Length: 204
Image (cartoon, rainbow, N blue to C red):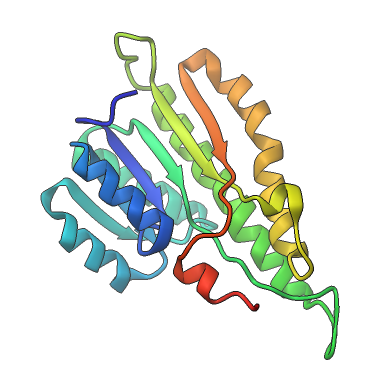
């Protein structure tokens, strides 16, 4: 799929990888719907990108927020050609630390944002894409998820993060197989470490 004149939803677009994806999409002639829980950061990126970008403060774990994001993209640009899932958190915490066992709430929150939030946006975007007309190549859209090298080689303190990203990897193939009949491709990338605000916040 060529990016020019295509419409992409980008989660986690307020900083890091998501913001970089948004800049690349606009630079290549595409349109970007920017989503993030940090409204101020979103507004800053959107202002930088100009008329080709819109933004909406969005919690990817919320069904209502996800539905609103889909509607906003379609209202602004008429359709949705791609979803790039970059929203995520990367806490570092040992299963048994100096202060006791890993906080269960923190584990659940990590899985909720990184895995459940990713699935929430996939299902909503895929539903919208499946109802659109296919292009000349039979494509209706593409979904790009962000896992991590930690899904395959998690380190000490990454139990929650590695589990959440392994889940993203695990659901990619069955979703790709299911959505292929609609002409929707589903892929997942597994980046290593690079300089983002999320990585900067992780413990050494």
